[in-house]
Length: 309
Image 1 (cartoon, rainbow, N blue to C red):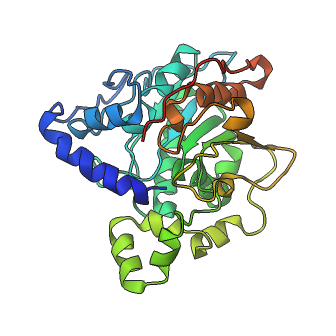
Image 2: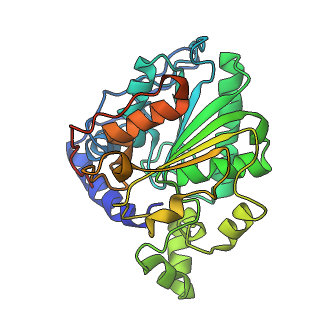
């Protein structure tokens, strides 16, 4: 979700004068140019102002072949307003270091723009599905796993329900996903009740209105059950989520193939918020555990990461 992130985006656009300039060419084959590892989403966003199409570190090596230990490539799915580098400039490298083939792209925004994942969710999910097919073809894998943040943890469910994703996705792991939308502490709910305000938001970010709690889009997406058999679902959420509110709206309905996890139940002193969760080492450990539960490791709760928002 991203109404709060709009303000962040405007601040970061102003930072363009100090960011690296120029776009990044994308190779037709092989490994795409990638940026460096970043410590938090703010540093990554500032870096990507001047290079919004650059790949996250460790991602988009189109010659990568999955190993027997990790047969499914991992597709990283962006949150509202975020480009791939901004969202994943830390976790992508950690996944690659663990031996995964990792891929990320920009969808739901103007090509080459800093702000991504703002268009109608169905369109973004369609682009994500096309990218997923490209990954499967390049790697030779039969299925892929998806790790998504915010909207990026919710919109693959549209792919699953309507675009054939049920036979192509093995695991869906959401970091603070907007599965049941958000009131944004009542602000987004109030906007929906004022047609001119709703239309103004929708013109800039159709996905924002669609992620409002109780929206027609979410009612349709969740109708008939919010999960399907054959896919393992994991939701990793923080009680300090300040975008998906209330925070429990991230959770999926209980089912044998669903795990809803609260970070503070794992490490009580983890104060990570919505924007910081993809950079949080405890959340990252839980992503690795969800991807490979047979080799799960207990997170190191002696390290308390800072809140970055």
